[in-house]
Image (cartoon, rainbow, N blue to C red):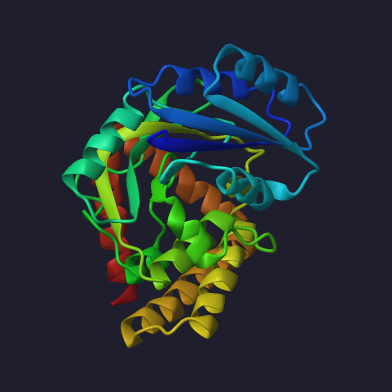
Length: 293
């Protein structure tokens, strides 16, 4: 049995899929299987995936009619054989040491259900931005913490049993991955974070996550669903209320003050270049606290 099952949902991903699969083949740890779910692509995605399947028996391709990313996840994880599933979209990249580092981390820190790591945002010009500066993430996140902000989940490894526990990914929501983490944590899953960058998330205007208003509205729905369906503590319920207010403020800013937002973003970019990412973030956090007081 392989140590990890890497699930790659792919829809019209001919531009990036080969790089994603090359990175899988380059893993230092060889005990893996990779399941590519061709979700009804109309380009060369299926042909590219089949070429890799012929090159390495550890790769499998499953084709289906288009069901969205959640449906592709359900198909892929449902066919997985390993005890741990690793999520990797068709435009993400696992760095060569990813699986080896994750396996060692799980051995050092047994008993957890979700193991995430740091990573990089990959820009179109090839530059990288570290997702978390040192000290920005706790070693473990509680459900309250995940309600406030989801952890970076590219390359996250989780126990396949969680998939059965929560009934898989919901196909009727926008942010199916965040929803999965919320429901898993509410069901008792425990999270552990490794502060080593092990993956790349490609930034593209065509990604779902680039539509910020839809992301914020989805977050509101997901945490509200959790509020209504799960047996939450008072701290967790308070975190839901705070998360809803925060997302509503962000939507209002997007809709009401586009010029101001654009100007603020230009200032943030300039400050980051001059002061650095971590110092700029601390200044913004200080200003945010001052505006609330």
